[in-house]
Length: 222
View (cartoon, rainbow, N blue to C red):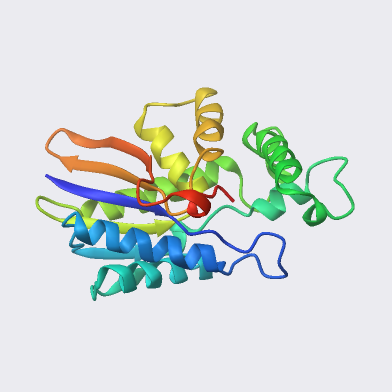
């Protein structure tokens, strides 16, 4: 049996000019996670990540903490959906949503995401929720192929992708998929780990959002 570890990136820079940069907290979350996994005996046979800077920096921090030197493969299918584009297309949008506090922004994000996942306005978005799901499923299939018996593949990606993969493995489909995805996505912890088992009985979700390596101010959601 093999395993696939899906890691949500560390805390990015909410409210900064460039969100796609890890905060100091995000760097420490990555180092803590790497050290935690190494102490647990995790020795990845494959390391993968999306193309976003927060993915790269999180994996760099993890490798620093763990002492891993496994070659890294980049795959854009693990990138997050365009959450800013989704928010920008929401009706009655505040003049500048980035000036909102975290709680208000989260509420806006959830409402905008619900509109996007509903499928009734697909033509307004560069990537529909359906297409997002298709690329996440394809990325998962290729990663699973690299997590054969006795192997461990570690993927650094984003909360939306992790939530969608987890929802699918839980059997959510049709109208239940967007609702399940929203519930999982809103509780995803920065640097949280989701474990997927790969074996003769198929690909199965073992855990979602592990974060015992965090505590105090290092436990963040956005």
